[in-house]
Amino acid sequence: MSPTYTPRSVKHFTGIMLDATDRMLARWQEIPAGSAVAINLEMMRLTMSVISRSIFTVDIGEDFSEAGEALTQILDFATQTSVSLLTLPLSVPTPGNQRLKRALATIDEFLYGIIDDRRNKPPGDDLLSVLMQMRDDETGEGMSEKQLRDEVLITFFAGHETTAQLLTWAWYLFAKHPEVEERFHAELAEVLGGRELGADDVEELGYTRMVMDETLRLYSPVAMMARDALEEDEVGGYQVPEGCIVTLSPYMTHRHRDFWERPLDFYPDHFAPEQVKSRPRYAYYPFGAGQRTCLGKHFALLEGALVLAEVGRRYQPRLVPGQEIKSHWSGTLRPDKDVIMVLEER
Image 1 (cartoon, one colour):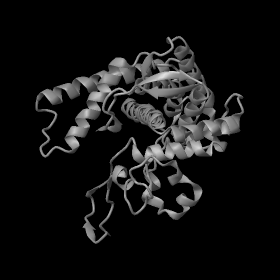
Image 2: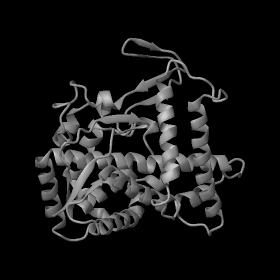
Image 3: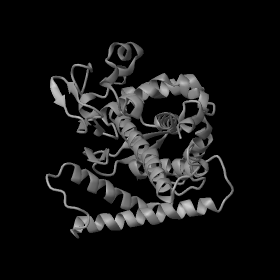
């Protein structure tokens, strides 16, 4: 799958990303002036459209509500289990286990239906078709239905949920920090000059990338991650036995005072070139690091920049007063409630 997600290859998806964004903006044009929307739901709907068109060649952004609710239940269960002192096997019919089984059945029905439908169409260059055509170098066998299901699930989830949270938090932080938003709009005016946006423009949007990096620093969608120790090691004076699970927290590292000038503030200048150069390599790792770096990193950053720029050319979402938004970890770091914003046209 790696060749699909190189910095050069992901530009292939630019048209889908911009078209999905423009469709959302056209829908926003129909909303009465002064009306408010839940920006987190708008971003989820958008990124779901992008990833489904990219990996399935169909837009399921409008038809994912039941499966989306099931996915949320699975994430909640996984989050609770990871911090629980006692975890009962799924064979024990507790209410939580029964809810999980129903949610898994809903997800399976949804994904296997998409896989079956794709098999009945001619091969294409979408990711699902590529996976179906792959063959093992030694056996010549293709992926089993379960392997396809697993790859599609993680790609679909990682390809929309995390990017939607990045975009949601970015709009929220813009609204809270007008001086940052002003620099963002100034860069759009300088680079684009009012013309249409293209994939090659993203490389010129340096401040926009700094904004995304700073948003990911404070609100990394993956706030915790785990790795298996392949062999015995010593880290910081602590013995790490072979086979044990090592848990890392970007959320904590990204707020460590040894690495960040203003660790608790939204300060995009943390990612000015000179700041990045002076900082330890692994002080910032929202996509993981090393051999296990997130496969979709370049896809997510391209989509994030295109959406921020395309929306920013036309709108300044304004936070409805009186909201107290906190972060909530449930599989990803998301707002604890809907983020209600008014779509103010520029």
